[in-house]
Length: 313
Image (cartoon, rainbow, N blue to C red):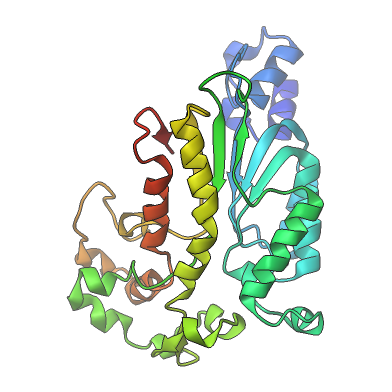
């Protein structure tokens, strides 16, 4: 049993250990842990791991990345917020790329902050930094665009992994759903949302607003979402042509109101404002203004529109 726990710990699968495994060979146990709990797996698609917000500017987080074992047959989704520092971002992406067969990445808000190092390197705007990150990913073998995995040679099968580039635009603002929550959103100028100070956007994508800097990036979500259009059209056409039977898409930001952490019952169309009596209620309402965009949900629908057999997940 001790050896089983050692193997499980190496593969972050401690929850899979059971007495029934005592008669298994070590190879059988290893396969079981590597496949996330499937014995004698014949699944043609790779196992997909998901993480985000690893924030490797923090030493302990970077140490965790360095400590990860290798998963040479598996795929990793890295859904943003790795580092505002390009050198740190590159090192982190390289470490993940060494441990997984493929790594898929989409930047979060922290990744597009403009640091002193960025300015010194001549990258003075967040959209330009996004371009630089795309070049970095291409250089280190990390995907920021969609790819078909597993089953590509078999008619009608294959797993599409589709990163969705995104930002926020007030379309998930809870005060629109429940006007009585406007009082909770007072004091946005004191809301310490660092994006307002550390991101740099073209003037035409911002408007005056009651925030820390007196501006809000109203047009940024649409501008960044437009970068997805060609990829979504290409994947959608491939799906209609029978190329691929599953889709896994991901973004750093939220796609709809029901995914907000304070929307207690995601299956319900109405929000329960009484829940915001909790101590962080005012912060929750402010957060809804920087949480995501309905552009994301719209693009996910476009991705699989008319392809009834595709299970979007």
